[in-house]
Picture 1 (cartoon, rainbow, N blue to C red):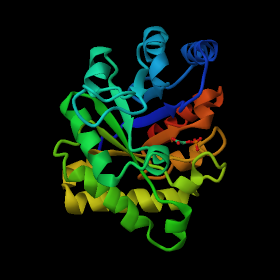
Picture 2: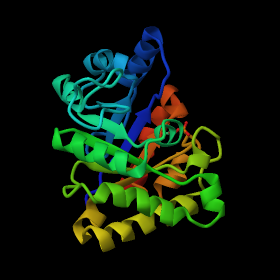
Picture 3: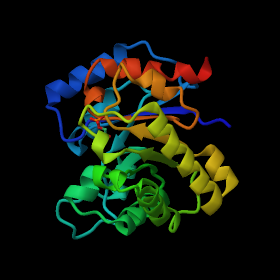
Picture 4: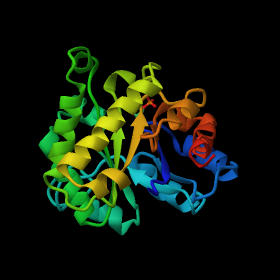
Length: 253
Ligand code: PGA
């Protein structure tokens, strides 16, 4: 089916110039599976994007953590998709739960952002995921389907979309989803794509897992048939990120 393993490192709002340089040199020196086994994208804060892009090994790519919903202009504090394209930043993370929940980004707004970023030529890591309350009330699939639907309503070409399933209760908590929990939602999402978008999109779209992925739990998660990679927060700032990249070989073994 050709879904190349994808690992994103989401650095969130962390780092100084010195710390960023250290992570880049760690990544540049690391022995990792080749580019046909794993696609690697790291996402520093906006201000460090040029530094990371210009110093990172060329087979690793960079992503912004957000961008404005439309063309730039009088939107104080925002960064437009056009600016990212101008800086040759190929990827952007959109709809992260920290933005959905803390900054009140609604499903439709995230859908608009994804569509606009794609229209400008960016590739998008689109994040979805349920809260603990939603999981406990049995509405996980309804929640992630509604989040995905708001994207699908505005997007016809999924070639440049990676879908990141990140249960909110697992993010930054050390409480990783079990491999079975991750597989169940990924499999349901793929079924949703098949029923609501197309067989092809369901078969080819990478669905990656995020939420407390680390060097210890990545292999078992990577072994799940519908887990096509990871979006990694905390552990992407540490040397164990390299172990997570290496888990891609589980798929090719
Ligand atoms: P975490 O974050 O790995 O620190 O749980 C994941 C994410 O928010 O993308």
